[in-house]
Image (cartoon, rainbow, N blue to C red):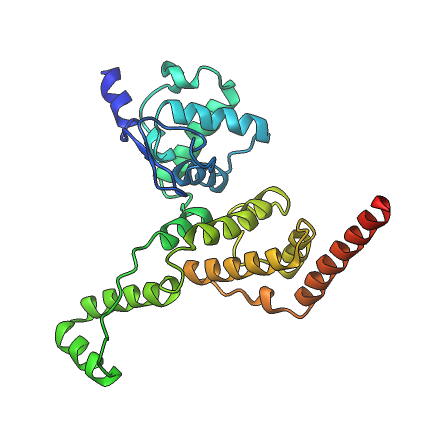
Length: 272
C-alpha cells in the first residue's frame, strides 16, 4: 500500500522554469539555464509561510529539498498519507519539522488556512500570457466593435475576450522585452522577501521599500527601467502601484545619479 501513497505525492514528472520556460526531467531547486527559482517551489514555500511553518532560512532550504525529492506539488498532498518518516526524502528533517509539515497539511486540508497564489506565481502566470493581436488593418474602431459584438454574444465569451484584450494592451508593446520585465520585477520581489521581510506581500511596493531598493543601484536609468517593470508587474497582478509615483522617488533617482558622478570624479582623481 505504501507505493500507492507514494504515488499520491509524486504527481509530476517534469518541471518548467518560470523564467526561460525550459523543461527539466526532474525537479531542481534552480533552473540550470538561468538560475531562477522555479515558481512551483516558490509556491510551496509560500504555502508553508501561510500555514505558519517556522524554521531558520537554512533549514527551510533543507525542507524544500525534501519536498523536491518527493516531488510534492502542494503541501495539502501530505495530508492523510501516514507517517512522513517512511519516505526517504524526509529523513534529513528534524522531528519538529516533520510535525510542522503534518500540521500545515492538516490546516490546509481542513480549510483552517486558505492558500492564495503567491506574488511570484501570479506575476509569472500573468507575464507568460500569450498575446493574440486583433487584426484591425484598414478598419475603424466602430467596424471592429461591431464585428466583436457579432462574434461574442454571451457574457462568458465577452469576459474572456476582455481579459485577452487586457493582456494584449499590457504586453503587446514589449514582445521582445519580457525577459527584462521578469528580471526587473523579480529583482524587487526578491528584495522585498529578503530585506523587507514581506513574503506574500511583495506587491504593491511601499514608498519606503522602493527607497531602500534604490540604494542597491549604481545607475539611475537602470533603477528607472526596473521601476517601470515593477509598475507593470503590479498592473498584471491586479494591484495599484501608487508608491512608484510618489515625489520622493525622484529624489532617490537624483541621489543615485549624484553618487554615480561622485564615484566617477573620485576615480578620475585617483587616476591622475
